[in-house]
Amino acid sequence: MSTARPDRDWIAAHIPHRGSMCLLDAVEAWDAEHIHCISRSHLATDNPLRSDGRLGALTAIEYAAQAMAVHGALLATSADATAIASPGFLGSARGVSCLVDRLDDIEDTLDVRAERLSADTRTLLYAFSVSAAGRLLVHGRAAVVLGTAALTD
Image 1: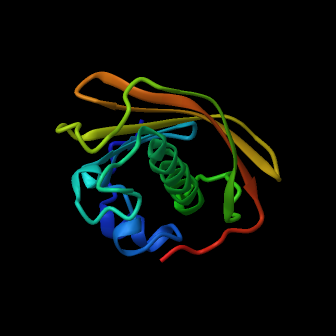
Image 2: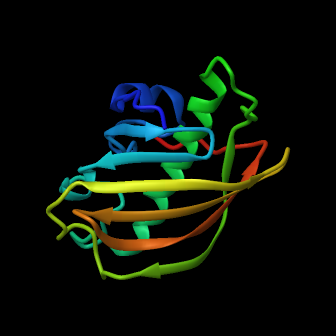
């Protein structure tokens, strides 16, 4: 895995999410099939995914989706990339297991990991997990449909 550590500014410049909707702080490591990002935005009181002051566990899917987008951007900008550089959107999330009710009461940094399981010209399939201090919080699979993406401010 590469130990290059793109920071939040790099991430925000390479995915459609801006401002507080850019949830990831940095990339810890990545290679052609995997990415490991970190985040502390789950603790921010102005996190745009909060509802009634809480950040539900299912919001981990958005953290993972952003890690997948960053993975695509890293692959597309790497010198030896054979990746598809198309924008995309989250098509589905399956087999999602939430082992906690919420994320905002987790004091540790979130570890957001994704593994690309398959890819073709139209879709990508990833397995993902979100954990903190070695404790698994949420995991599942997500399909990304390539070709169009809605921008989020």
